[in-house]
Length: 326
Image (cartoon, rainbow, N blue to C red; front, side, top):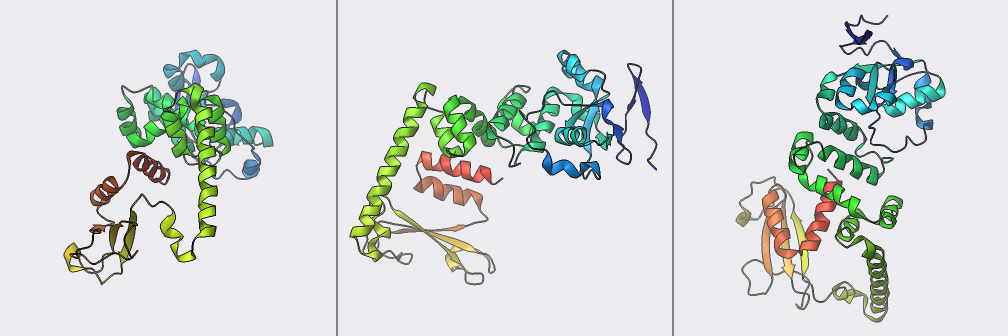
């Protein structure tokens, strides 16, 4: 039997003011968030089992709390008592497959501001494979619009400012390039770079880059056919130095690093491809090679090494890659 719910009267409607996850709320009292960042709910087949068991409750706020933020949505909220902030797909699945109620968690603090409510809705979807990246970018942009600046929005939501900037930059893509990004034909790091190009020139720029990359691929393939196997790696790009990273096993830390025994240390060596050997010379030798000892646990040292050996474009690409893993 469910617990008792503390009730209050809001606009002559009984509204729960405390969370109750032990008994369900009739679907007639619930409405999906009109500001849901998802443009579509997708295939609900994965939620068909909700008829028998709801694995996760829905996060809701009162209709009154929601309408205090967006009074213009009154027609979309209707007579519902609660607005579902997180769990719109669960609500849709329950309606589709015949469940009569849903378990909820009521947290009115989510309705303290537009930014808070939008942020809560976005955060449930970030990282989900079926959350379209352009939808995510638009949702992040909507959250930022509710704060004085993008930096304050990032701080309030616990996001990095770089990640926020990257997502918002995708909205500068032309419709054609957004479609390619959504389809997986365009990498995020390339999309960010193309976003700096005027929209009218993005498609032609992208096609030119694709053609150049394909031509380079053919040239490299031809080079591999004409050179001995042992020389193949050295001929990839003769104008750029090679950076070799060697991880020293635990317990065998070189004395000059200052690291304690048991720590793993990475030796990053920059070697000219023109050199007679691909094996780096020891520290202190007369070779043109320069050796830097860097610990993985020292982010600043790793950043300094990357900055010294990479172009700005390469650094931005690395930032995209690192951000995608956060």
